[in-house]
Image (tube, rainbow, N blue to C red; front, side):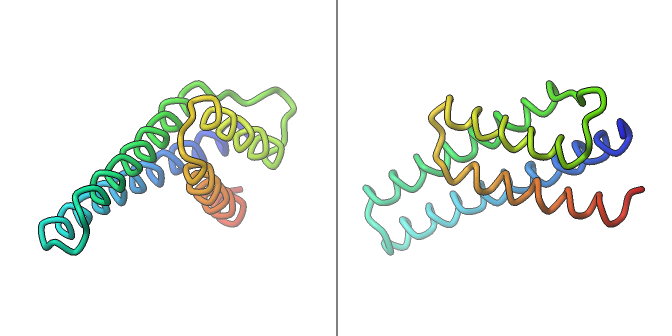
Length: 120
């Protein structure tokens, strides 16, 4: 079980780091739209502010993954449930946008499904 959780956490970190890259790409697209005058400076700044908050929230979760430990006797589904709850609490307590919870939970579900189907 420890090996399974270890693999899960390593893959999840990669997925979340990829999500960070996606947010950086969106920030670049927002800047391009501002440069092309497709959006106002105000909208651009609001978008960038939100993207920075989302990025920071995901970064916080990635950092928190290093502190996650398997509880003795815990099943993989129980671990996933506890991880989701912990991520939700971290995002809420840090006042990051709620969308970060949605992004992270989707990645957790994606990796958990992969681990269930591919790793014994």
